Length: 262
Image (cartoon, rainbow, N blue to C red; front, side, top):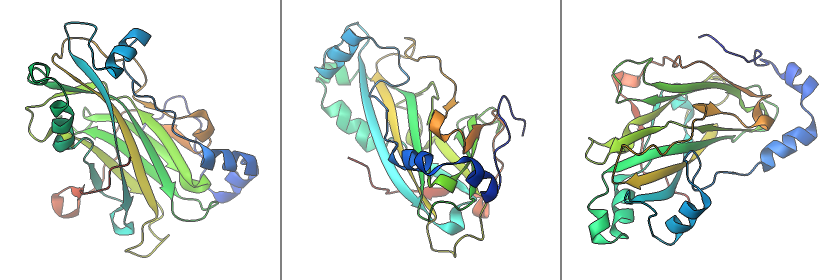
């Protein structure tokens, strides 16, 4: 996998201990989400006000929403394809039911602006624990073409955060569109815990828009993956080469029925 513009990630505890202060570690653990309801989209102040009161400033009907979820990863599944059910169809139907009927029937598209991912360790700080993650659009047949970005990080500080800006859209008539984005992960410390234990959790928030058209350009032009500055000591972005991970029995491991965050 070829790197672009990043120094090699420190790979051992001694290297981290030489450079990471307790103050930095404390800041990382206190780092809160800074995701806003319009992250990744081109929308001005007037448009935000109109969206909040349920009005539309153009003939294009556009409704902005945020969805969220969380799941813990068992040790035996930390090297496999994990399916993230990003936005359940039931949630979309509920949002549409809140609209006027003449507007709801025109809504055919869902646009993904930003996905914020937080990985938090269940073990103590200071353990060298490298993790690789790729975000995939599995509608695309070619494995490389379907990769939205790859991140390599380390949970030495107990937490990692990064943002994904897919700039993609789905038609609500697509087959099972809510499961088309997948997270490929590979936790390198296979010896860290026994099977049945969960070394980390993954929490995500998704900023999305429902609209009646696909042709209106909604997205800001950002990098596919962005890492907040405070985490760059522990993570780097790769090119769009995906992580190749063998699937158990040739199928995806599906993470379903995870709790939705309030």
